[in-house]
Amino acid sequence: GESVGLHLPTLSVQEGDNSIINCAYSNSASDYFIWYKQESGKGPQFIIDIRSNMDKRQGQRVTVLLNKTVKHLSLQIAATQPGDSAVYFCAENGDDKIIFGKGTRLHILP
Amino acid sequence: NAGVTQTPKFQVLKTGQSMTLQCAQDMNHEYMSWYRQDPGMGLRLIHYSVGAGITDQGEVPNGYNVSRSTTEDFPLRLLSAAPSQTSVYFCASSYSQGTDTQYFGPGTRLTVL
View 1 (cartoon, rainbow over the protein chains, first blue to last red):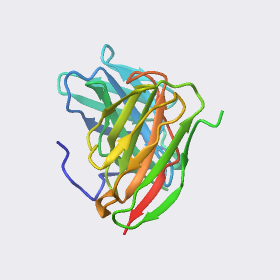
View 2: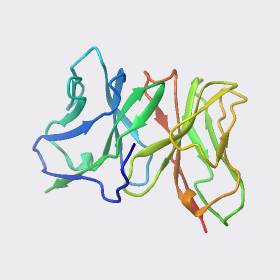
View 3: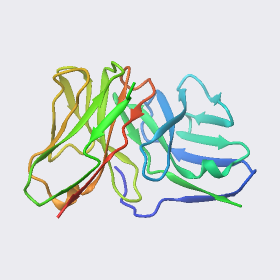
View 4: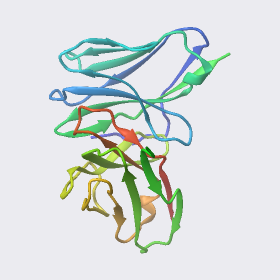
């Protein structure tokens, strides 16, 4: 089950550098994974997804890596920009439900 | 398309009151779901529906009811509000269950006194 926490992990990155946000998922039967971005006061917004038969997928400035052996997912953002500042969530589709992780706050340093 | 709409945007209730959070989508999506988001936490699934007439429980269903009489609408009912239900509620929809992009509404911020 989830642990209760009031503080999101925070990743601070210099503008222009690459960001790597990590996520551990729980269900080895999950076959679909999604990354969402949530800006303050808004609902989550889809960024990129990956199915369990893949280990890497690239989008525009974003790459998702999936390591099923250790149940680990990562989101890489290239050339991080101020507009990337948000909370990022990974989500997994397991047992016909989509379950979200707790999120990581990405803070961009000028 | 309006996408996923939620009403109201804000609501304050007293303990014991009941209310319905509305959610509608105009994208002909089969799959709809409700999440709650508490400060510093991720989204937790309350209830979901894979199509009209079908609903199922998520991670935190207690204290909430849902129904899905049409493809477009998926209301969430709080039967007797409690302070522990103070949260931001998001509705989401997608074409199918689990393997399609979910589109989220703007959220309803609920405070229970």
